[in-house]
Length: 179
Image (tube, rainbow, N blue to C red; front, side):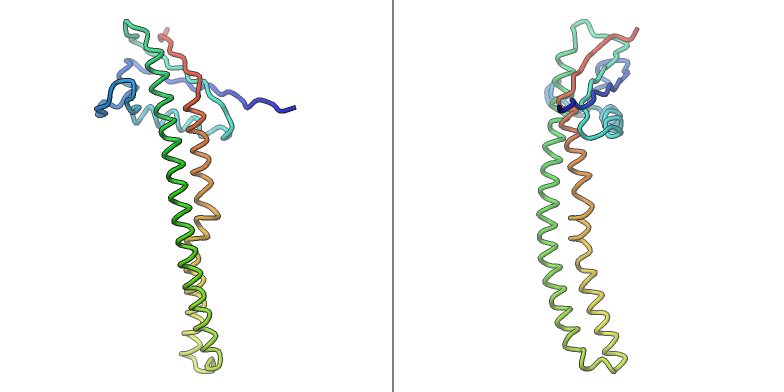
């Protein structure tokens, strides 16, 4: 039997509703970017949990506006983190594209370096030519550094953040007055 992922609660306390939004964003209110501090707060808490976690976000507002802001806040948080998830997928796609190009370039350069080193093998008795041969071998393998870095290490943090953003984009959001 498959268990449901845990639901973690993140609580955000603000004085006014305006503190939740980026005041420099010219788009309509319900599509505004979240304030950088609010975003960092939610993201940092969410990243502490496993990537499969689900979230409940409780926004405590000290000076509650006269009209119920719940729908506005829910829409803003969902839109913002769904957008961040899309950006994360795009970033991953571009990184893997860069990785493939780097791999082709690196393999080509490594091949040329290995061929050059093989040509110098017969002349390896001279110190300078041995130095050139070893430099070609080292340089060829160093050219593989970037593709290996991308394919071994750089992609998975982007995938993890993308999943967290997606889960924040589907979070259950509650808006309550501070008591």
